[in-house]
Length: 94
Image (tube, rainbow, N blue to C red):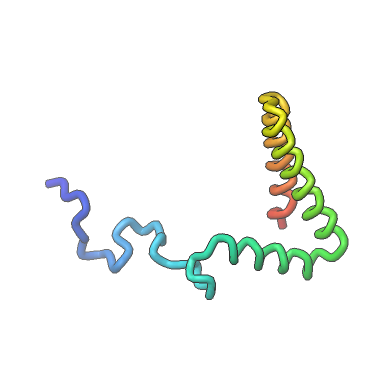
């Protein structure tokens, strides 16, 4: 028998074991924006001047993405999106 959506005896509140019900143990109640800001502040404290450089690069890449959008430049949007990705990766790498 296939019972979709029914709780099983081995599970608690998290039927699919994906841990979507919790907020990761932080005090932000699942607020993604607050988590992002806290992570940036933590990165600044830990990384010093290099973190400032990385955050400024990320901001600059977002500005480039906005400019490409306003110019209605599909190729520019693709390049700018890649730049945003690279800058964000440099912020999130340990």
